[in-house]
Image (cartoon, rainbow over all chains, first blue to last red; front, side, top):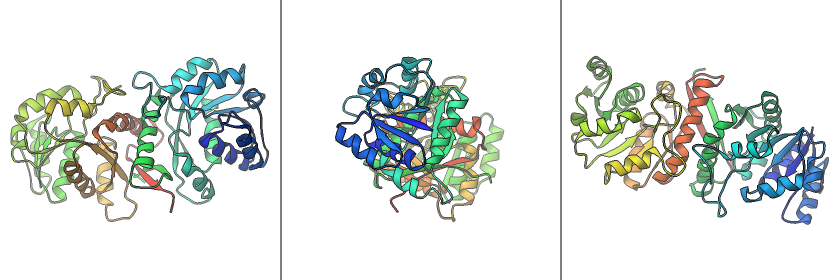
Length: 213
Length: 213
């Protein structure tokens, strides 16, 4: 699969690296510096770097991983998107990253879907800290993988996303339609609180368990 | 400890039963019928039933477990509350239980705290389905207990609540101040979606895992 990374920061950089390690063709774009983009491209097999438009070209999936304030800019630079599934881990955070700017009656994922309509949007990967990604990937052969929730309105797009979630070592958990990002986005902030302000380490994951069996 | 149950429905009935089994003195109140209250009282050692005012009298902790639409009525019937820690698992649901009536810029727990000020409020137990409680309790001697998040603004009240969470078989996870109910309440709806509309059973629990090792 060909995957374009729109936003190669902590989250996009690590996920792109893991997608490449899992065998996908990855194009990193939109980082703080070209140097960072080149470093990411060199650090993963089958990866390269380019502009957002180059990342978007012929992509099967696009990972959107920019700060909410950069959303319009990166989408503009990506140009016309038609085919790709847009997987977003961008939370609708305010400028100082202290609160969601949208919630309850809408969500960042729904706002995004309106902006890029008719592109198919899946919300995923925002519910775990970037710090945990490599250790989960490295432990992917072990049983009891951590969960990762995703939500969206298009079944095929969700299936594609679930495959990527599996590729990086998590157990995909279907959280329903895109409007359920109204639940998963606040959940992301709960996880962030536990990871960064709790007593444990930022390498935090979660697992849903069926206790009936 | 003496625990009054305000709202002896699915959640309050089961939690009160487990508190009693764990050795606490429990008073059930406010159910659909007196018959239900009597049955609960008979089904647990050290439990009895009464009015909300009787449940509240000399209680160390009060579990609030009513539908949001019943909040004012049950609090009015409980009378003046001064000493007890009020532990709420009541989610601010609309009449047909399809959506939260408050969120993003406030939460049910914060609204409740304003209503009962200066009583100390801890939000807990709302993030798991009632269906999972007995199996978690029965497995409490096993390792890897499921997590249960709680939040509040008073350290001593939170510690009391954490003890009760431990008593019924969960691993208490401090989710910070009461305002973080803005995250835990939508998380409850995420869990409810997975439990009741997902592919698994309603006996769903969750566990946060520090993957740093």
